[in-house]
Length: 117
Image (cartoon, rainbow, N blue to C red; front, side, top):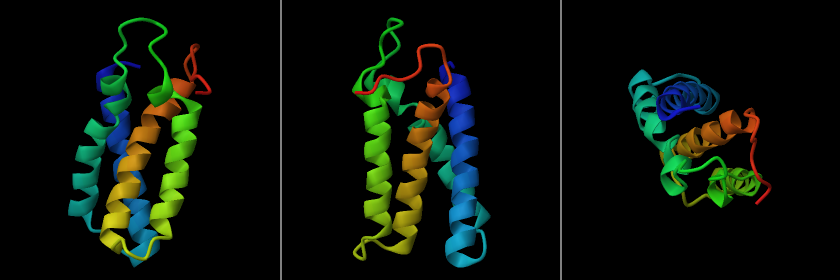
């Protein structure tokens, strides 16, 4: 996938994830917040390639790895269970982590896939 495709997919995935989170947590959806998260998610989904630019076919290291994806899932669990983080901040940070994860998920489907570490 190229940058534009990652950005579009990440933005849409983040928008939809944020809508689901809001619906589950609040019973309703603030469309403005969901759109804002989607727009920011389109940038966040590019972070793996910003951290590890695709300068060669083997550019995928830690920031493009199954380990980093798993670490982010653990971080989501920590955020969800932390009473010191407001519900709106939890919603935002979980949406952004899912934006990053969208990049990893799409790269996982390529012939090079993702390294373990």
